[in-house]
Length: 287
Image 1 (tube, rainbow, N blue to C red):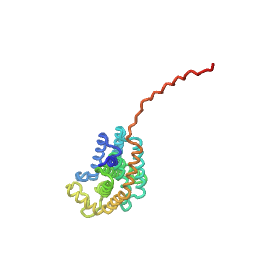
Image 2: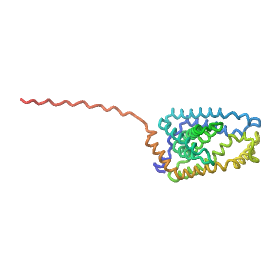
Image 3: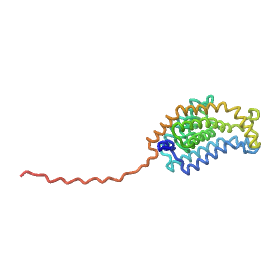
Image 4: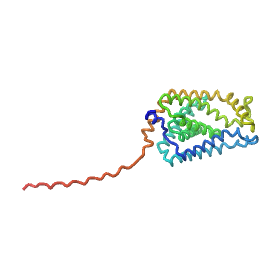
């Protein structure tokens, strides 16, 4: 791989070990929040109905800890925070333009290319913040919001975790990822309300305490019959946008990062001694 290709695939913000630990804890909390229906006892299904507000507070605290860890380690500076804020605001605006109509959500294009350029930690924060901003702008803050933040953060994190590539290979790689991520987002998000759904297709209703394989089979039937028709357009739109606009957008974000000199260290040059004034020769006087 050429040096230019290596430089273009290098994430803007590298994850330090403290940030990696905080990010791992955040992901574990998110996975537990989504996967609990498959491991709970029969009498615990409704006991978690009021957990969403606590999950919201916990996720905000963990993301704040992640940002503080990056700031403390020098991974984030004021310019990087500014880029995060701009991209999150743009994601919120895209959410307003198309709030999931027919499953079409262009915000996922931004999460894929933004996460690819920013890196794992900042990509996760970008996904979570973009969804949160969109929720505030559309008045859509509800018990589903923390789950959307985790799932969207995983989209940005996954884009940053893809193998290094450049040129058309990177575009096709991101397009394939965008297609899968658009579908996977729906697969994960349906889990937040599936245990509480009182109605559903035949063979697709949650049964607390049933064996793991049986509930997975029921959830697969529930998903295929109720959600795949919405998630497939989202994935196709994301892949098409990456193919059409991915290259110029990735180039713009990376050029902006280089011109802002995010990682350029600062130093003070040693003081240059001021030369002593030279003595003027005595002025000649006429006799």
